Amino acid sequence: MTLRIAFITDAWHPQINGVVTTIQNTCSTLEQLGHRITIISPDQFTTIPCPSYPSIRLAVACYGKLSQQLDELKPQRIHIATEGPLGIAARRYCIKHNLSFTTSFHTLFAEYINLRFKVPISMGYAFLRWFHAPAKKVMVATPSVEADLKARGFKNHFVRWSRGVNSDFYYPRDDDFLSLPRPISMFVGRVAVEKNISAFLSLDFPGTKIVVGDGPQLKELKDKFPDAVFAGFQSGEPLARYMASADVFVFPSLTDTFGIVMLDALASGVPVAAFPVTGPLDVITSDKVGKLDEDLKKAMTEALKLDPNDCRRFALNYSWVNCAEQFFNHLVPSQPHEAHIQ
Image 1 (cartoon, rainbow, N blue to C red):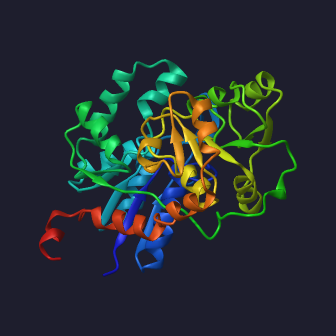
Image 2: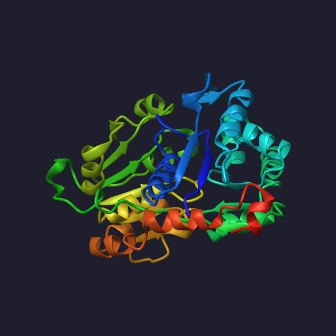
Image 3: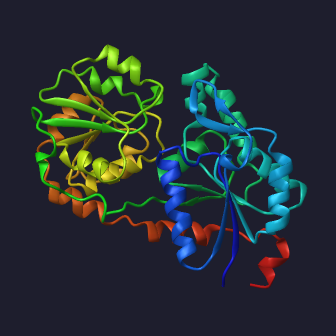
């Protein structure tokens, strides 16, 4: 049965992050299965730059146009992926028209706005509880995210929406791509305060530290850590080659709910070093593929001893097909009467 699915997200291209990667791979897989996916994203609206992060665009005055889009589409399933302006507008539309919908929890929003704007974390979670309360189901990537949200007073029906990896793109390669002192320890991702990159770069560790990515903290980190190599934004084949050239992948974030990039590293045959927090605890479930420690330097040292073949085999357990099937099976009929005729 082919379904019309509306997918509303404030995170979309040209952003490059785990949320966008997840949405793109999930939606493209569902389209290949014959479903009609309509993505409603900021590029379809008037936008303004996000305060403190101008490369992220936020839709403004979006309710009227979004309502028109949904009126015309008449979606049989509605998923609201993010808690931004478009997500809030879609939530309002669904409640107004008595439509059922699902949501997902991708980022530690309350912690992010606390880091950027000093908004109390308790206020952030109060907003998130309000936002997700009407959803029939809330999709989360890991058990620890669900447990944390329940502990913070969320009363929702939580379901699992895991993640995948493109193992045909990320795979072990010759390590002669970079002629730099080894071991090469690498971070790949958004160069922003919430990624806690300085915790990695400030370590006294042998070899070469590399940061691959762009973001608002890039200049600050370049000035503060002149001995590190900043490769800037990379994509396509160069990104995959950078990833595979590392000896250890360092994931210093304390605020990620998953961390897809860790799967990319593992598929490339690169072990992971991280703190034992939400995200790494759920992804690095075997000490044969990564090391988690409050002492990040110790985790990096121990990770260097791991077998790249084990890392690759572990990553192959994750696929975007499984991810898309999970997502699809959690969707709910937008019109109550549909549930009785299927």
